Amino acid sequence: MSNNQKMEDDLVRHIDRSLDVAEAEGRLIDQDLARQVAAAVHRGLGTELERFAGTGRIRRHQVARLELHYLTVEERKLRRWREALLKFITDDQRKQAKRKDSGSKTEGGGHEKPCS
Image (cartoon, rainbow, N blue to C red; front, side, top):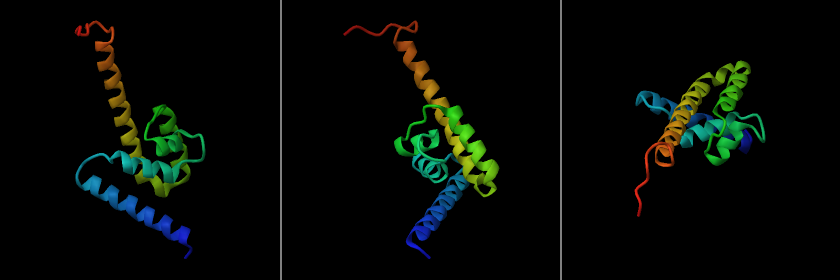
């Protein structure tokens, strides 16, 4: 077995074990694991999943979901990884929307900022 194959097998085992733990605890995967999954499944440079794997930020949530959809249509064995990452992406989108909403309330959204 080559060194690259061993590293790939170790990563697959790590992701599967981490998914087991998250499922047993009834929680979403954390950002580190989501980035590892995205790094393992993205289709190349410039994709939204590749960008997320590298930066930790998802700018275009719908594009990331679409990339996952097309990936897993072809890769049935990655279905569990897909579902976990889809849930993370949806949760991240909700959190970003909340931050935008709360920011607009203090920045001209009807509520005044206190003067200092």
